[in-house]
Length: 139
Image (cartoon, rainbow, N blue to C red; front, side, top):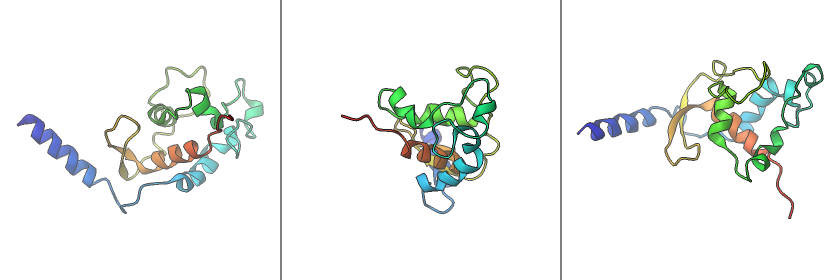
C-alpha cells in the first residue's frame, strides 16, 4: 500500500510539472548559456571567454565533456555542477552556483537512470545545449 501511495504521488507530481507540454531543447539553452556561461567558457564553450584570462585556473572546455567521460555525456553530473549540488570535485573558487538562477517550472527529465525526475526547465535546457555542442571523436 505504501508503494502505491508513493507511486501515485510521483505520477501526480510529474503530471503537474509540465507547464506548456514541451520539453526544453538545445536552442532553448543557448540563450541561457550566452547570458550566464559564455563570459568564462566563451561563446563556443571552449573555455576562452573574456573572464578566462583573469582566472587563476582557466575554465574547462565544455565541448570536450563527452570525450573526457568515455564518449558518454554525464547529464546528472553536469546538471549537479551547474546548480551547485556537486561541488566536491571543483578546486578553488571557480564555477559559481546557478541553482537559484535555474528556479522555475519543472519538467520530468531522465538524466540517464531511466527515472524521470522533476527538474527545473532552464537546467534541462542548458544541459541539452551543452550536449549539443560536444566534440565528436574522429574515426
